[in-house]
Image (cartoon, rainbow, N blue to C red; front, side, top):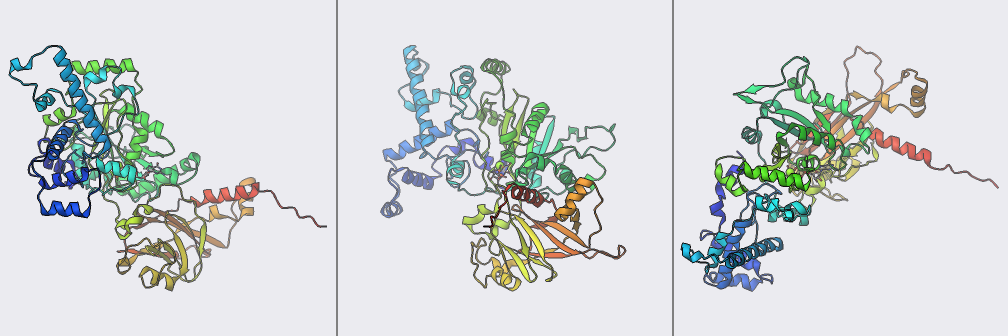
Length: 638
Ligand SMILES: Nc1nc2c(ncn2[C@@H]2O[C@H](COP(=O)(O)OP(=O)(O)OP(=O)(O)O)[C@@H](O)[C@H]2O)c(=O)[nH]1
Ligand SMILES: [Mg+2]
């Protein structure tokens, strides 16, 4: 299991360890320094270095008490990233520091609850001294008040209509410091990525009989983010056979195998409208069938959805599907493909009214369900899944960010009055192209908005440079003229091949923004030669011919040329639609010789190719329509 998996964290950070103890004097000293109202000066740091912290100061004890109180009020896991809550390691996920305003508010409200409770007890005239308990001791008072879990509202509170968990949809989401930094300052350290074995182990732990895996695939580099041999790797049910009478259910070791659905997400990056994207469904199905290899042959592939979480395309249908299915809904995929956003858009939120909710809570109380997260965790400390939080009408959904590795551990979100739960899993390792990119430009690699490129002409002897030399695309035959539409969020530059080589190997300065980190030039290798083997002449006819074919339904005339094309994929980044016009083949019996492009990248990796999706045509059509709309200039001759 990978280091990020919950098992490692849980064993390292058991709840009793979360309380600050003398094993962590360094962190405590640091926390004290950071808690000061003024930032620490060089002098103050030196003072700390010279003299050991004032061990018996009041501030220290107050601080320690605050941290101890904090562990009582924290959720077991951060609802934003799924990491186990902790108050020990500030640089690790799940850390809740007492210096944050929200945390201080949380502590204050707890203190207020304690005081209120003790006043109530005092007014009821309950004498605790008779039972051998002293109420004078403030710590003793705190012990008497049940901790308040954040993510799962207590039954007593949820039942009352004026509790904030039911009342206000804007209930504060108390996420860890890392998630807070990610949301507000867009900075955090990426979590290590799990492998397929770790994901399979999580699936095996499912508390549900019926499970469904949603494999999220990024549309931007489709199908590069498909998990290789996904059915075997995750031990899920194979695709349905063409035989309608064949059994739907498959069992292994007495357990029902989870079903698999494919979600092609971020589909708004492909085209401007839902209709345009939907028109690519058949193309996507064919590509996926090819990418699945043997598992995709002679089977049905009806379980594909092209979704956009940002635009809400097909999310309603998927949401309903999840609601109907119930049980364990597992969202898996590579890092940064949009899993958490998919959950945000497709989570089947409860439509319950207040009365129904109160009734349901009453039923829950009667069935003597585990009252809060911490206790449920303590019930099964060996489970590798975190405890399921209490179902909430307005659950805190996972944090979304363009940093790969945002989700650290599985995040469980129950729905449908105990009908099931959606589980967001951490993303698996994707290409590591970002390792060769400067820190300040790492996020630039992620396409978050649709790119509307100009189609550029790569003339004979020229090459296309992307990201100031991170990627170079050169025609293998230097006499070929290529057309390239770069659906990529990074800068493109056309230059002579010799110059391009010098720029990529860092022997010549690049005039624009350089993305690649220093020293990357020496790692550049060929990622392969890619055939432009798909004939797209039909969709690139001259306007007059295309109009005649469309209006008069005449067959496409024999043309003296052919347009051949391919999409060159850059992992986690986007694609380049490359096409070339060559002389039409005279003799059909001759073996085809396709024009090729060679791509150069760090370590010769991160590149793939596919049949062209022809997204450029949507842009071209729009440009032509705009041109037609423009009023014609009429010249007056005087
Ligand atoms: N344009 C567009 N961008 C999206 C969509 N869904 C997600 N994104 C963007 O993709 C990036 C990654 O989204 P996340 O949901 O955090 O991805 P993830 O798979 O959960 O990532 P990890 O938790 O790191 O594995 C973010 O910048 C999102 O804004 C979508 O439907 N359209
Ligand atoms: Mg995520």
